Structures are given as C-alpha cells and as structure tokens.
Image (cartoon, rainbow, N blue to C red):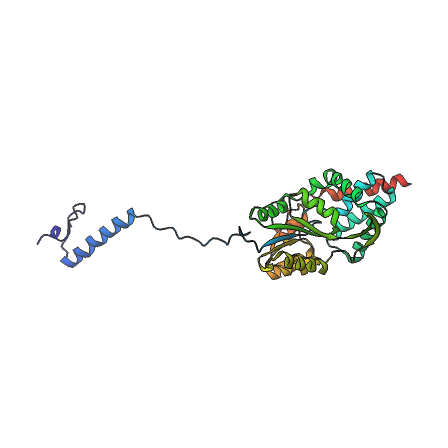
Length: 313
C-alpha cells in the first residue's frame, strides 16, 4: 500500500528512502502535530491580583492619620505659632523658641517627651486668656498662609483613596484639637482627634483636659472612636512617621510607616509593615523608596532663628 494512503497529508513530500509503515506513521503524525501547535496561541497564565485596598464599601473600615511629618511637613504647632507671631500674640524671643523646637524636631527625627512638653507649655501660655472662637478664626487664616503648601501630596492621596472607598478618615495628633479640626476640614477628611485645651466660658485657661494626645493616648483614642463608630480595627488602617505611634499602628490590620524615623523604620521592617517615604535627601535614599517632596522648611526655620538672634543683639 502506498505510504500516502495512511494519511491525507498532501502538503508532506513523499519520502525518498525506504521506511517502515510504523515509522512513516510516526513521522507524519509528528509533522501534523507540529504544524497545528505552531498555529495555536498558548494561553497566558494569569497571576493572582493583590487584594483590593482600601476595600470599597467596607463600612467597618476607617483610616487614622498622624499629622506632624505624616500628613504635613513639620509641626502644626510651629506653623500656628508663626501665624500668631505675625498677629502680635507674642514676642520675638517666643518665635525664636518655636523655631528652635521645629529645628530640633526635624534633626532628631523623633518626638522626645520632654521636648513635646516644652512645646505644649509654650503653646498654652500663648493662648491663655484668648477666646476659642478667635483662635479658630485665626487658625483658618494660618492654614492658608503656612500649612496648605506643606501637605505631603503622597499622604493626601492615601487619605483620598480611603474617602473614595467610602471610608471615614481621621487625623490623630497631639496638636490642639481646634487646629487639627481645621486641617481635617480643609483636606476634606471626616474629623480629628487632638489634644483638648481647657476653656471656661469660651476662654482658654492655659491648662489641658488630661494630657496631650501622644503615644499610648492616641491608641486609646482610636480604640474608643472605633467602638463608638462600630468599626472593626482589623479592617482599619493607620499611618504615622514616629515610633511613638507604634501602639496606634499595632491596633489596626493595615499599619503604614510614612516618612518613618529610624526606630519606626526598623520596627516596620521587622513586622512586615508597608513603608512610604515622600521626602527627598539622604534619609529617603537610605530607605530606597521613591520620594516626592522637599524639606526646605528646615533651612527656613534655621534662617528664621538666626535672623531673630541677630536682631536681638
């Protein structure tokens, strides 16, 4: 029987040397299989996508953001102090002290309790005797003058992602609750947890209600708010730059280290937390994460302090 009778493969040339029927069958079958496989597009293997976060429609989730150096470059109290000085609330020596406190904060890269107490006492002495409504109105102006341009775009985008997912977003800060509330409202956030200064008849007494909202106190505030709002903390996210906020970050299921100090960076890496750094310069380069904003306020604060010292001589 002629070999061509085994398969109807007219495109295959006739063999030129003797072969057994089985070898002819094997060869022609292999050629046909090769021809077909070359015309087929292999399926693309899909890699599983990362879980969506924030999860749209998850009403049990919310986000908590530290303020100083997380949402905004520098300390809110320093910027507020600059605005009050411009309005003659205090003297040049007080502004020089605020400038030095800001420089210390930036160079140290972390919040020292004694340093924070010094900042607190400075602020309380300045607002004592003033009306709450007056400071709130001035705070709106100061935000436009000194704070709006210092908001980190990267952190702002993170907060907006939670808002777009239908979640509430809160600032959690040691700054006065009035200042924090103004910033939260201007950024379109839900609200703010902050340090409460005592007032009687709408006038500041120069004392605090309890202690500053700092360190473990932030964690307690988040825990209390979550209970009141019916939130599941394992669904929530928290963002901070400071190791002092590890208690708050440890409460939630999605902790983020933002522009972290050295202690928080080390802890975050050990725990597998996500890091984001939006600063430029040597610190951001060490972390190896893309940065997107400058730290010129340090030079400005130093220059202000030097200029004030020269004027006093």
